[in-house]
Length: 224
Image 1 (cartoon, rainbow, N blue to C red):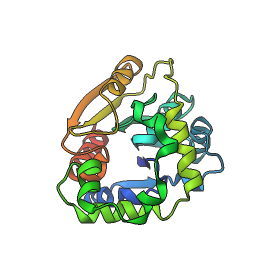
Image 2 (cartoon, rainbow, N blue to C red):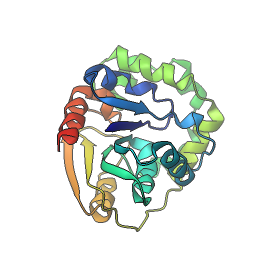
Image 3 (tube, one colour):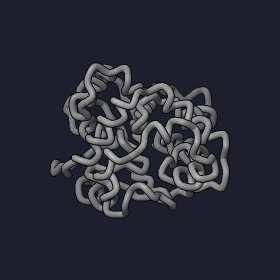
Image 4 (cartoon, rainbow, N blue to C red):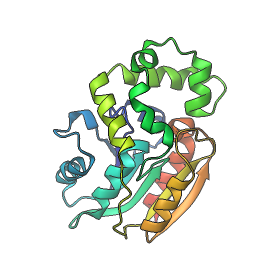
């Protein structure tokens, strides 16, 4: 069985490093780099990822932006998906702030001029975790502003889907998520027939905030 890791908006998968360090070497993982896919459309990306999976039994861990991709991936027939873990994900516009995406100064965010303590508090709900902030900054350097703008636009224009999902799911809600509203969880409750809602300590980048929690969760799901 393989654990498929689908990253958030940066798309690089680099931010999964803390989790990979926590997971035992016996856990077979594959990080999907969204930037290597042919298309930028989330639904088409789901189809492209499906072609990479084939008939292999997989567990999917999707973070933030990629939750929409994972949802559509799990809807596809003829795949052998055992479980989907949604980490601080959303299936519709997560907050009214996302509609202001055109005003977001990406060059400032990428410049490294924003104090580490501010990024650590807002993104990871930690006082000053320089390690994860440096990881965040380095991942942004691997993606251009055009791609980031496109993904921000996708987020701002997400429309709530309506098709029920029967694959077993776990939704991990961050205890201090300043980027995704609580109503996002309600959408998963409505659409996922077999879902467990849990809360973990940390910020919106919850996998990086709390990699030990996710290592244990992944191993528990494997053992089911």
